[in-house]
Image (cartoon, rainbow, N blue to C red; front, side):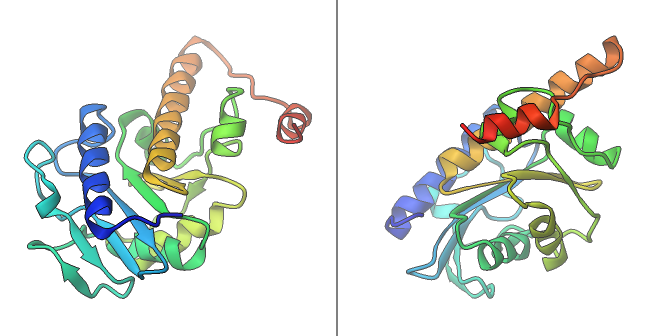
Amino acid sequence: MNHMTVQAMKEAVCAWSRQSYAEHLFAGTSGNLSVYDPEQDVMVITPSSIPYETMTEADIMVLRLDGTVLEGPHKPSSEWRMHAALYREKPEVGAVVHTHSPYATAFAVNNTGIPTILIEMVPFLGGDVPLAPFALPGTEAVGTGAVAVLKERYGCLLANHGVLAIGKDLEQAHLRAVYIEDAARICSIAMGHGPIVTMSEADIAAMRGR
């Protein structure tokens, strides 16, 4: 969980946003990320439609989960309701990263999850990457749909939309977003070579039992 000052939370959101943009997890002004401290009841989130190249801590928005703006000169991310729903429904979550990374989002456009094809998907993602049903962007339903499929999973795809990764902090949530995109890229390449072979349920269970 996050027990940082609001200023430190703003700095972290800005830094991880700019890193995610540099890594092509975000494109243009798409994507968003946040951290939440339940003790302060403070969600710190990226602003809406601000270029990542020029974003500073002063641009980052501070909200309550009901959307009340506490600090910041802009509108919060249009997906703040999705972030808030995750924090309300999954109290173990301290950070959310929402990307439009291309390979994983392509699976979301195909309306299919990413199967467990790689050993690192088990410890880092919990297994396969499930698909949450389509919901209108900017609505709480995007978040509640994700909550429904994030059972023993640390990330999911949002149908016709993008990728969602959760963690105890931004470092962990960001790493999981990276692994989702990596798994999607490798799966896409492998499918071009022929049928893919997924890990067996027995092997997945054995890895979880370690």
